[in-house]
Length: 224
Image (cartoon, rainbow, N blue to C red):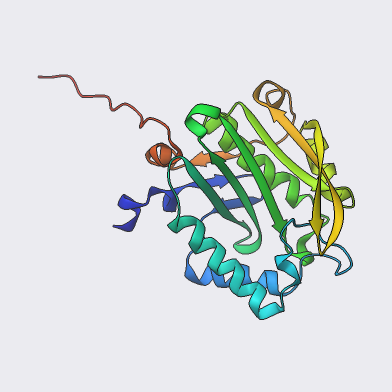
């Protein structure tokens, strides 16, 4: 079975109202349709790479291609997990978790988007808390970093709720204009003090080598 060769297909993160997992082909199409329908006010640009400026059909195709590209380029030293977020069986957004040299650095980064029709209901906080559960409780991360532009208060509210602290700023060119990115950082010790719904992790053990971590030890039955 394919899951025997790619165990990430069996990885699930469950919160009180959300499920995060890799999508099947038609679910990926549903996620692409969600992106095509719109993600933010056209006057704003929350992404460093302004892919959401693409026409709807190209925007949808970029979601599909990005998903396949990241899976195809996956290595234990350079990986990006793009999980589709489902509420009541419907795709409502995407939550990403990625790292380079994780086995040595123990640092992850996150990014996400929620379909415009589903914003303003706390989904962004719940889905980021889910991948932080995976990072800290499942993979043993030491730090998680993220960031958002100054004109993205919704992302900053999520970071504040989950215990991140300021980690500096950087300047980027977005749509040909300077923009200030405010970086944030969350440590494992601080994560343990956050009062928020943790996710239930299912199917993680066989995935650990793909994240650059040792496979769990098998317990041999006693000889007899």
